[in-house]
Each structure stands twice: as structure tokens, then as C-alpha cells.
Image (cartoon, rainbow, N blue to C red; front, top):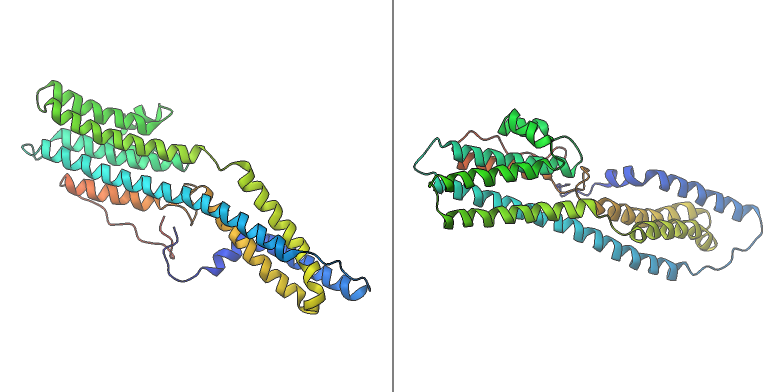
Length: 294
């Protein structure tokens, strides 16, 4: 996620330079043709066409941003639920400062957050799970199609064993279960966003119509702009291509790009808060790198 206050024009250019270069070449070709041949270009309703495309693209961008914001909301819910689980676990084990139960639950919950991050970004979670919960747990987790789900099951089993041994009662167990349900609901919401893309029409038609508009634009402008057509047409095209790129970037908030939800930083927040709750050494918060928080 870009956190710097300065507009990142370089980032925008890097994302749209290829179609923008093709557009500029086309603009130059149309301008040369206009001055080389005495053919009057037909009037084109580009203003009306551009307004319709802008409305369509705005609708698509709003839909994409709604996905991005829901993803951020779900991660906020996971952070809060993780803190609640750690606080409840600490309360239930306050008579045991070095409780194996406390450490087991909290380390598995941190590993759960990292595992969800890796699963959403489509990479391997083994290293982080092994670092936090041990290689045995990591081996059992990666044997599953959904490693994070195994970690949540083991947390539930820890509390289930504690109830069976009489260390916690049924009411306390029910309280813990409600928090685990909140965690599971957040996980399900994240997986839904990742596995359900925007309908194809939301991606295909904005791309098609925007490129068609950019092709028609210099033909409509060359009579009034003359030799300045490549500059004016390219600048207008840059606006439309940039909005198109923004909508595309927001469509998948877990793609591990500079525009995505900062999963690594939020996992680090969970790790710090939960380790400090367990009175264990905690790492430093993650800092932005060149204005980007990952």
C-alpha cells in the first residue's frame, strides 16, 4: 500500500507507458495524415462517448475499491479478534506465567495470520509456521489444502483439552469459541474476495471502450489542435488509462503489489501485540520501503 503523501507520477507512468506509447505513435500518424492529405475528418461525438466511458469506469473503480476496502475491514477484524483471543488466553492462564497453553495458543494464532497472508498471495507458508509454531505443526499444516484452518483447529483443541481437564469451564470455552468463529468468518471473507473475481464484463468492456476512445480521440481533435494533437490527445489518454489501471489494481487486494492491502505489516502488528501479551520478545513494526508499506 502506498503511504506517501506525494503523488507517484512515476508509478502511474510505469503502469501505462506501453499503451501510452502506442497512443502517442497513433496520434502522430493521424496528425501527419491530416497535414499530408486534404481529407476532412468526420465529426465524432467524442465528448458524449468520453462522458459515457468515464461514468462506466467510475462505476467499475467504485466496485473495485469496495472489494479493497472490504479486504482491509476483514483484516482489521482479524487483528481485533487475535488480540481478544490473546487477552482471553492470558486471563485464563494468569496463574501460570510460563503456561504452555498460553504460548501454544498465541504462537499458533500468529502463525495463522501469516499462513492466511501466504495463502492469499499464493506462496508457501511453511517457513513462517515452522518459525512460530514448530516444524511438527508446520508439517501437519502444509499437508492440508488449507494450512490456516489446521492451525485454528489446533487452537480449538487446546482449549477443548483444557476444558476436559477442568482448567476452564463451559462458559469460558463458549467465550473462546465465539472469538474463534469471528476469526473463521474473517478468513472466509478473505478467501471469498480472493477466489471470486469481478465479473468479466467489469474488466473487458472498460478496457475495450477506453482503447477505442483513445483511437478515435486524435481524429476528433486534429482539426482544432493541429500540430499539437499528439500532445493533447496523449494527455487525455493518460487520464483514462490511469483510471483504468487504478481500477485494475484494486480488483485483487491480495496480489502483493504496491496498491494492495499491506498484509505483511498487519501480520507484523498481530505478531507484536500477541507476543507482548504473552510476555515474549517482539520484533519492531514494519516500516515503509520507498513510500510503500507491504
